[in-house]
Image 1 (cartoon, rainbow, N blue to C red):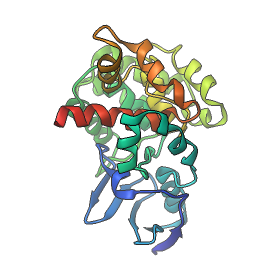
Image 2: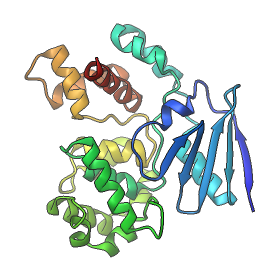
Image 3: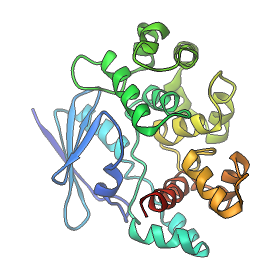
Length: 270
């Protein structure tokens, strides 16, 4: 059985812009986003008027798809904030509908966070994909925390994640009910996660942004943000200065992080 849905997201919403970037559970081709979810496969495309057309194997898959897409967030207050920053306003004007798509499980966001720490993005993506393949029968699927615990840290480390991070990943998955974090506000989530080994503010921000869909969680300390901070504040800028970059966008730090990082990407491609 195939079920369908049509969603009118809070505008602006740009599926093509949002679907870019590495995530082993999704691919975007010829205008269609294909999501491999725990419940099944979903396909999404955007009509000329902006509506999203969803197709899935059952209603449970549609529910998960709606969460991943994050269509319920009205980020127009963020768009209004950027006018004071001329450089950022120029970038945002070209990608007003950009959204941080979410992972299907919080455990997947935790994997993403552990893999992305201080290593090249392509290597992080390869390790993330390898871990998800260990927990999936076929194509990579966002795992529940129980699947990570069942793998064990030695098996996870065997596909390239540093042993201390693999140990921390399994420890957090075993001792913390990750999905219950949805019931806590963002400051409490960040505080709880940063008490865990190998989880600093950047990693906690990844979990909150992508696993929980929180717009008020910035990627503090991201290397892209650090490079922008050094261009603005000087060569010694670090984590504190990335907080300063995000400070004008209280409540919308996740969106600010994405767009400020695009400044770094544009500079690298210049």
